[in-house]
Image (cartoon, rainbow, N blue to C red; front, top):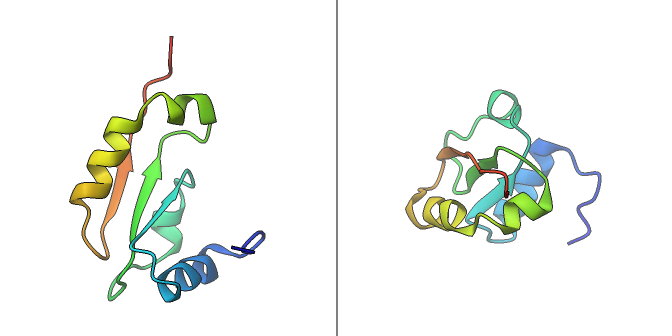
Length: 82
């Protein structure tokens, strides 16, 4: 998307403008840095950014995507693979 280096606030605005419904991140501080009031986009924050852990745990991520509403913030804890 060409968004490398875009700050959180601008990233959320760009994603929303491009029609995204959900932004998935591992930035746990984003909740305190961004106000989602009035936003159409929702945020899902993963407990890790380690790709093998994310890849091994699709079910909780998909469940969050299916139930999240615009302007919501959801944290998803992922178990590390054995």
